Image (cartoon, rainbow, N blue to C red; front, side, top):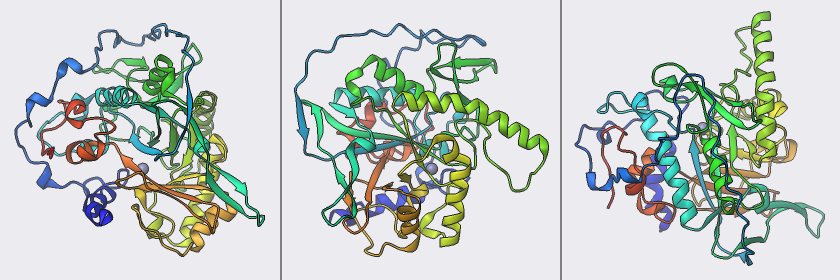
Length: 421
Ligand SMILES: [Zn+2]
């Protein structure tokens, strides 16, 4: 049975998704031993992007390369009948040499992240393999059935010939991880009104760039390849609350109730608002990832309800209402994790999200593009496939229709086991 065959991989992925919480818990030391570089012939460094145009100079704002504005030839649109794929990422590692200073140490960033170079190569490969980004709201929508009840349905996607739909979502773009300078620090609005990111370069000097963060890299890729986006869709952002939003400290802290804290929080909220606004204008959309990155499959109804209130107050109030829940750790409201299994009983926690909060799309993590549209409640359940170090190292076959791990794997990653059959 397909599910059983995938179960071990799936369980490992789910267990290892405790990105925000587990500091050491998830690493499998057996797979992180100091083995020599696997098969150097796989690392074709000539394929890594040429960064010569990137300015690392202190404090400079790099003008974006003028985008070509090609006139697209007329395209035949055809109804897509197949699967809608769904990949997810975390924020990309800007500086692998800072993330992995000791190449022999196991490191959780290696498990959960891809590097800038890997992300660039993966986007190129997705585009080359005929994928086109679709937005979740274009794929499924709500309607009233003949009995007057709400249901979800899949819409007919009319896509250019020879294009296949894919959803891309991005989790935990919060810039709270260590080492802090291995990532950029926050998204900002540049003088041109577009989204940029600020951080520090390898010498600790201020750096403003669009070359080192997931959102800006995808933005640029779509500007240069407009045929990679259907209907203007970009990515979905799975947003928690506890570490703030996009690098801004917008969260409350139940242990701190000072005027200074409140004022600072208000400032941070004012700074993130224009970034959110620009993202909304450019086809990005938001999902709840729970406020506290909590496991819904291990939470009481009270905890689920309290977490939802806090998300609404601190995140929804800024990014707007969303009907999408992207489960932290993949742990579902019905008590299960991902995979093509389903619990018949829509429990009170799921009911709360569907009936009281208006959520309609629920995404977990699994090994396939599993989707199920429920008939009894207006909800669509789906799995996403994780693009990260674990799957790059261990699931090359399952991802070959997207990209070849052997071609995108960053040679700057720590040494460690690679299982490419
Ligand atoms: Zn997460």
